Amino acid sequence: MRPIDISRRLNISTTTLRNYEDMDMIPNVTRTASGYRIYSEEHFAYFICIREMLGGFRLAFISKVLKEVIAKKINSALWMVNQTQAELNREKIISKKISLNLLCKAVRPISTRQERLTINDVSRESGIPVTTIRYWDKIGLLSAKRCVGNNYRIFTSEHIRQALIIYALKLSFHANGQKHYIDKIKEGLVDFDYNDKSKIKDMTKGIEQYLDQTNRDQIRGISALYRLCVQVESNHFDNQI
Image 1 (tube, rainbow, N blue to C red):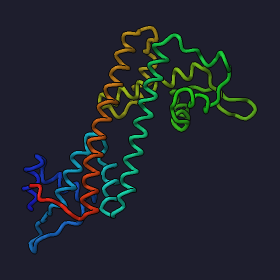
Image 2: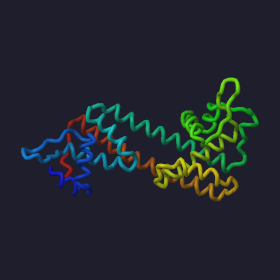
Image 3: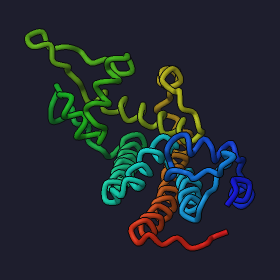
Image 4: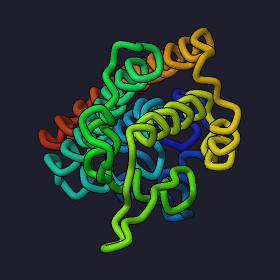
């Protein structure tokens, strides 16, 4: 198969195909005596998988996964995408905590049980990883006090709410395709109105829709990856052009 044959079939440029090849996302390509690339049904199967996975995964991640497939490390590749699903599920859990904390007044503040909280307490209550909370504190999104004796961070129940708001803003920016969001989150925290329930409902609804769509896109990509893995393990590639 010529590059132009595949590019027309997938409605992408031959330059894009070469970029995938340069990123080692497909097996080695045979060339003619004059240097022209010759793709096989196997290469086409990889290209299809890449295009299907792009909706739910970043290109750099897809490259890492497909390198494992090319190396016949099928289980390793599948566990990698399983991890991304686990992370997405964690974001779904956090989004529910966001809705409960910001919209439901019946939630009892943790401060009624404990005045001083550790970073682990905040993580457990919010669902947000300790490493993320520590990073936010370092860059000034959260402002934990320090214990005089051991210099450990000291948090309160208000930090839990702040952390959930930060995460909500982060997911909102992701939903709108914005990647560089730290400065925007700082601005959002200053302007955030706890009493504007209508705006908060719209934000949480947008987050829910974003996560649901991301889940669908990832599952679609994982399905394509699994089909490719079956073909690789059986070494059987149908002529799909």
